[in-house]
Length: 58
Image (cartoon, rainbow, N blue to C red; front, side, top):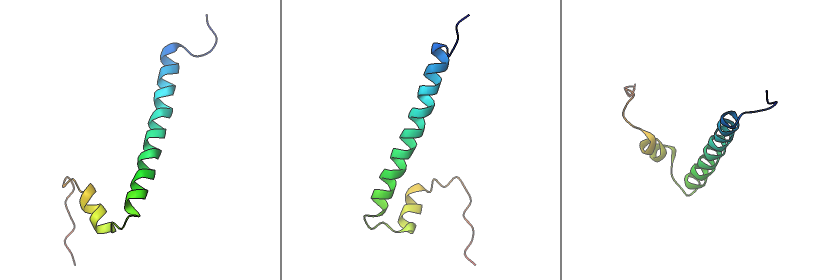
């Protein structure tokens, strides 16, 4: 019996860290883009998929 990770476990771990790195890079990119003058309202429009009901303004 081998000690340590199997190839499958190793690949899964690599994918996990790669996903974290991709998410961090996307977040950094979004922050760069938002600092170019986009308001929160414009960002909200960009990310609003319409899948959630919007609250009525009070």
